[in-house]
Amino acid sequence: MRHATPGLHPPSPCRAWDAAGARPGGPSSVYDAGSPTVDPAIFGSKAAVLGICYGLQLTAHLLGGRVEKVDRGEYGRALLEVRADSPLLDGWAGNARQVWMSHRDTVLALPDGFRGLAITDTCPYAAIADEARRIYGVQFHPEVVHTHDGSRLLRNFLFDIAGCQPDWDPSQVVEQLEDEIRHVVGTRKVFFFISGGVDSTVAYTLSLRALGARRVRGIYVDTGLMRKGETQFVRDLFSTLGGGDSIHVAEAESHFLAKLDGVVDPETKRHRIGQEFLEEQNRILETEHFLDEEWILGQGTIYPDTIESGGTAKADLIKTHHNRVEGIQRLMAENRIVEPLHNLYKDEVRQVGAQLGIPPAFLHRHPFPGPGLAIRCLCAAEPGQVERMDGGWLLPLHSVGVQGDSRSYKPVLLMDLPTGWPHAGWEAAYTRATELINANDRFNRVVLEPVPGGISATDCAVRPATITRQRLHLLREADALVRQVCADSGFEDEVWQFPVVLAPFGVTEAPDSVVLRPIQSVDGMTAQSVGMPVALLQDLCARLRALPGIACVLYDLTHKPPGTIEWE
Ligand code: XMP
Image 1: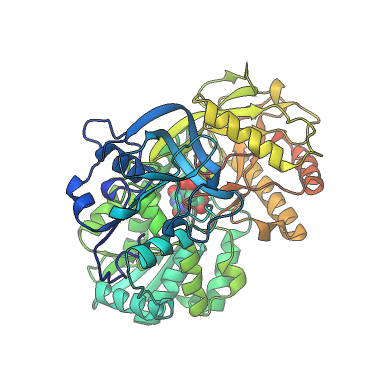
Image 2: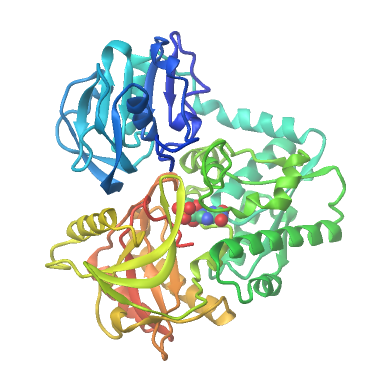
């Protein structure tokens, strides 16, 4: 709704909201004291209304329906069956359609005047309407890419039901962004901490165009938490883009590793890394004489970063991004920051990059998180044993999940191999994983040991571990191996991102395991786990297990939600 809303000039009033201004999938229950609400007068105002997720529940609740917390949640993929014709679902009839869900509360009785339009296995009112009053609701998320053709539903609502007119013109975006940069920077100069990722490179290149090379500097901090070969890649890239002379590489591995010494908690890792970035920044500003008021900080922050850091008015904290720690907040408060991409999703950033002439192969590079391999190198303070439970083994490894807007930090389920695996294929494995996760609150992620052999995961234990040079080296090697295999086979084109995680889960002679997390996404806000061709996976697992210190290889079957893309 973000683009559509500011760019629309509705001839008649129109309201599409989620949790009274909160992001869809919010953690609130309509019955909680203080949970978000709207003025019920909205429903009598003749405005067309679309409630999404919590918005549907709130609509039902305020108008006299019944909402209840039911036994089974619905997180991630669900199949929707359209049961009635409606302008909202125009073009959606026919076969069951994949939609993306994130809820446990469910509407069980509709208010007067409403009828159900669609169902899923667990949701009797997945889409509802009171057409006479132009009030609609959907329990799923039409705004995310994993809901197939969700944009059609949004167009139906905005253009056909509410009567809005579009005026968003992507071909004008580059000029608008350059104007915005010139406006924010004024007569000052801007420096970027570039990472070699798409976002900071596009933001930097836009600024070069808007302000000219003499007013823009790029500093690349080599944190020691980067992937194999990354620093050389960045040097080469910026020479190609013509900003080579304005790039400075700061070697800071020993500072970052010292800050992370003994740290286990993921949020503490992020904060320490964020703080160290700021300290590095200060050191560089001093040595380069950039402390002068005439300089401001430029960043490649994109829209999902802002939401997931609790940057929107009502969203709860899911993860703290390194670019939202205290020092950066202060620079923002002093108006010494420019974030030209703050309103764009990843796919839009790539479109802007293409218009700027950045090579397509670079723009389709997989995203990589700012805190680097540190958040893929899991740590543990205490030892832990696996525990048998229905459907598999509970591993005492913790990972971050996202259910509604709430952040969870829970153990992982190692699912029993599904019947007929691997010949039965991935679909059976994903169906089983989704069933298990929807039925049980004890874990937020499901993994598989897809190629048994050598040390079995059920013989492994969690072992206390922190971030060390050796573990980072091992992770870097495992990651490089996965990237190589994926590039050679073409599998890298099938996925949006492929985190490789090192977990302190093994046996004495091989204390760590590797988790493979290939996902498909468009903007990182939601994601679908992707199954690799089995022959490729068998080869990859054999090669990973041959690395010294690796016990076993696990495959993450969790979609987002309920699991985040990264494990921390
Ligand atoms: P999650 O794990 O939140 O990831 O589902 C969504 C996307 O964001 C990336 N990510 C980060 N990027 N700083 C970043 O610059 C961070 O702290 C951070 N944490 C996650 C992640 O790789 C994925 O693309």
